[in-house]
Image (cartoon, rainbow over all chains, first blue to last red; front, side, top):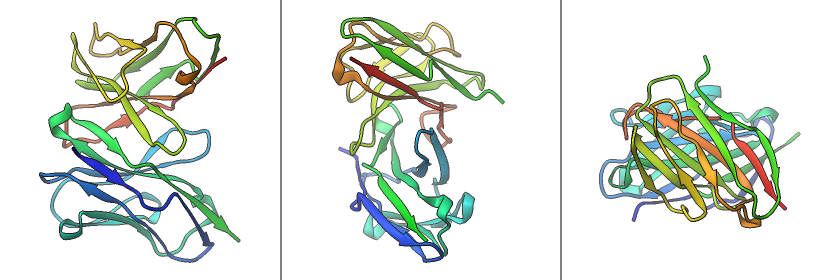
Length: 114
Length: 113
């Protein structure tokens, strides 16, 4: 069965430092991959998505992610974190053989210290 | 741009009560779904629909009913609320099963006491 794993439940980084959030997926075919961000008490906002083509994907708010098929990974990166980036981040993959549903990872909570 | 609209945003229910979470989208999307979000578990699919008149179960369907009488609307019904259904619920929609962005509503915070 398809699955998504985010190994880090909680990460703390200093403002201005670089960030990498890990995501590993288990999927037989070419995956459609997403990163969403959720601020406290808010809904989900799409940061970026990968469907095909260039494996380095640019998103909103200065985020990027790289699809690495050999490692089954889709890690999210940002060169310099801002305090407003503190939120929960979800990696997700579409499961085509299960009605096209999104399968989510457990989420990574990001804290930013001054 | 209305997008995906969920109502109500907040609701408190007593155990055994019934209620309906409403979801509507104005983008003519074929695919609609309901997720629940619980701490440490990400979002889990409750029910989904690939078009009007067609619904199917997701990962955690027990205790919930859905219907899709129109393309625009996909209500989620709790028949007899239980404390285990305390959660945040998200409705989502997209044009196709895959290859298109999935749009989420803003969420409905439900507490069952």
